[in-house]
Image (tube, rainbow, N blue to C red; front, side, top):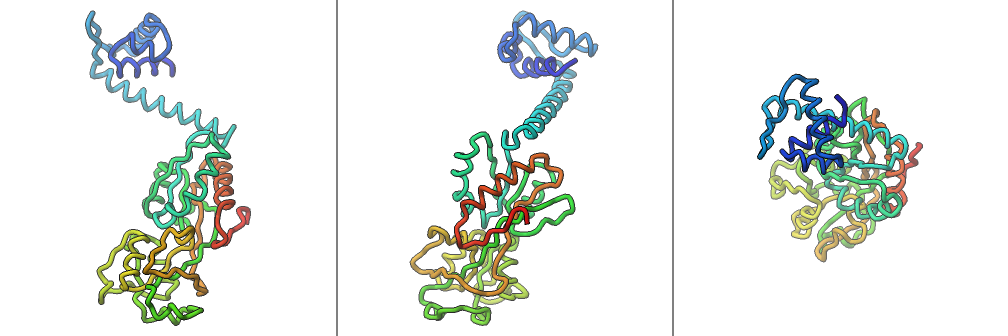
Length: 308
């Protein structure tokens, strides 16, 4: 039994026709039929019931074919791994990103990445921090763009940039005429937050020195799931909020009713990292990926040396 025989077995099971299976495998029908017959002799079971008009897989043939598919998947994984060592950018790279980063960062680097490295197939997933960490743990993701440090010893991270928070307040707010805004100015204001599954809400609370989410008042029941929704609520006069600098770039959150402005409050920033498993075999690909991201970032964020 060899990999070729398993490919023949899967092809016949999927087509239920020896001629079509042979065409799929680029061999003659007698060659494929002969190998399937030899495989049945080796295993001592009948894999397919044949008549002049039909081919049907036997119950034991179905079970054996299921294992054959698993073996072929593992063989493909071995080839991908080997190719990755020869060319770290060849093949798919599965990267996740948090909701508050993905729509603002991805448009900055995707075109550059495709132009410079067309051989790299980037597969992107947008999810919460917990979901992305789960993807790293179960190997459905190769890396994740996060704004929190790794939570396990088997995960490592490349620090990419520090992203300051900007203040969003209504156009007719008292802060409109104030040049510099301090932490003291935010005290007593209704600070709008994303729902709890987003790490940004905790980071904004820390920046504003909030010890708990509001449980009373007009904003207690608000559970926004996007920055766009938060800014619209600010425009309705329901409060203020802090948004990451990249979300402001190129006017992505711009609205006539909201002012978006820089603030200088110590700690009002988040650290964006590329997190990955320490055992991931294509780390050179991640380094090149991180380098491209850093090359296209605007000056509203502060880069971190990749070897630092």
